[in-house]
Image (cartoon, rainbow, N blue to C red):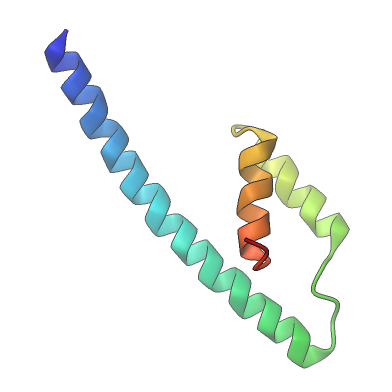
Length: 77
């Protein structure tokens, strides 16, 4: 049992590291997009686009996770 617990923890740690790196990359691109939209005079918030993104996340993640990612991407928290 102990071996399987340690193995599971190691795998989760690897996944967390990859998730962290991907989220940082996503946030960097999101912040760049916000700046580009502001410079172009385009509305930053696009509810139609947000629903599309939420739909993609909800195929595998709880809605709360998707909403949290979008909030941070928009600089809201």
